[in-house]
Length: 33
Image (cartoon, rainbow, N blue to C red; front, side, top):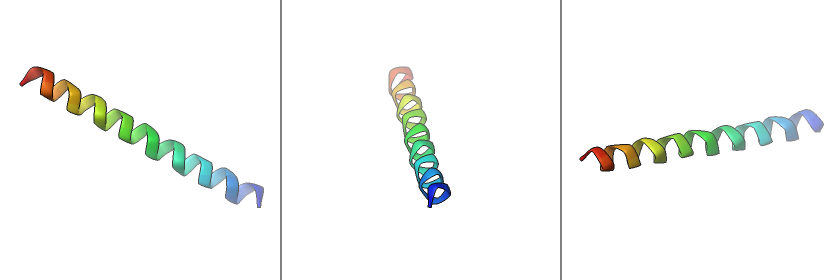
């Protein structure tokens, strides 16, 4: 049970991290253009 919760939390954190990186790259592209 603890392992399942830990993997779900890890998946959520990685999704948030990837979306933040994606938003930062989009902001850089809009600033350049």
